[in-house]
Length: 116
Image (cartoon, rainbow, N blue to C red):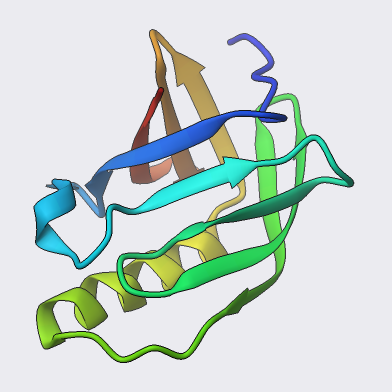
């Protein structure tokens, strides 16, 4: 298990709660971008912009003070967005391997991202 340097990376969601995700399932692709600046994270949750902070150490990650814009989208997008928000709240661990990052709650994988 290598320590993954989140800083400056953009992660693209490919699986959520065990279900394959493709970017055409929501209005906008779901992404997380980790900036070099003060552990800030921002991205797209399918419909809305999201932003907040993260704290990552070896194998562990937490998302803090996450906020979201308030745009309404179609029902399918809203449903996935809500799931994604709940996942970010629950995440406390990660594994990085072969260009992918998996976010976990304990040992349960919640979301898989491609690093592009």
